[in-house]
Length: 196
Image (cartoon, rainbow, N blue to C red):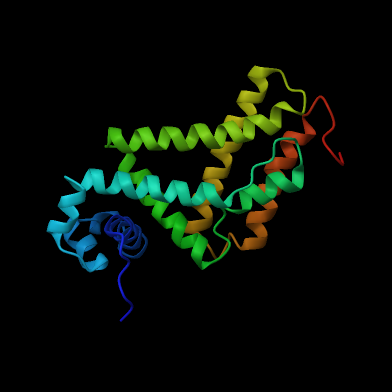
């Protein structure tokens, strides 16, 4: 049996992700998280007063991990934009698992103002990254914002359907769809992007 991590908060937040990915939102209880973390409920309540605080910490930890692996372009570089987007696509088992966790967070966000705050931060960051490269294509500010919003919503739809219908949304098809969404922005651009 592997030795448990020394950091109890990390053990707990990882266990939240494990329960969400493996059992779904309805199984997300302090008892199930404690069992998965090989911890007591007392240890969990020592660090988190309730389930909502525990989940909020797990969401924040997941977002920090995801941000650490993405390199967002500062300019309109199609290949760099696609590389950044690819980090979130469920192209393999590990990314499908991580997306399952995020879908669980999205479901919980509907009824939890604290989680909604984190989702607002995540959305603002993702939108901001897209807005940055879209603006370099010469769009007026309002049009750039509309395009960034449309791209975020379209990519979220792709993520959801790729997770729900993996036989249809193969990695190749996901990449083709994401590339098409990005290419659509470049095709509307007043200024040509690099290589286009």
